[in-house]
Image (cartoon, rainbow, N blue to C red; front, side, top):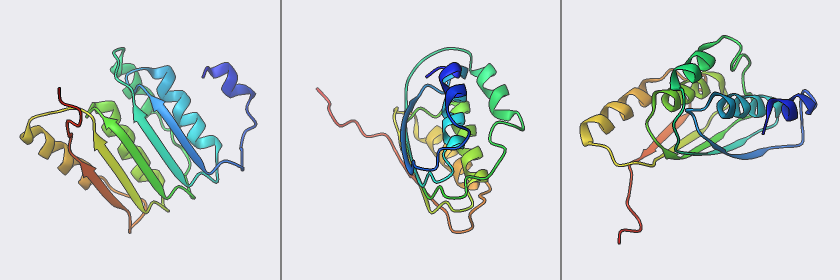
Length: 152
């Protein structure tokens, strides 16, 4: 979805409560589009993101995510977040941090790792995710390691 299409959306769409997105967090246009969509639905209570694998400029995405206007208002109704195919990139981890900080009604966040990484790195990522400050005092974060399901 392009910025032009997003500009044609009404500022707030109250009718949507569930959103499923595929996002390449290494592409600034996809990441910014996803953030704008999430902010456009004030009654959004369930968010599911499937991480798409790709290459581009992660540094540009990090600069965008770090701007004060990126997620500049609380997502007051968002209760459940699922992130599938988590690739453990800096941009994805920072996006999770933003969501934790901006969702005072968050009940559960599920993160399913999408790649195999060594156990030390996985432990470090898990610890980092668990330590993020959360706007919701009762939010639970569930992190599921990679499982090869269709081995040939």
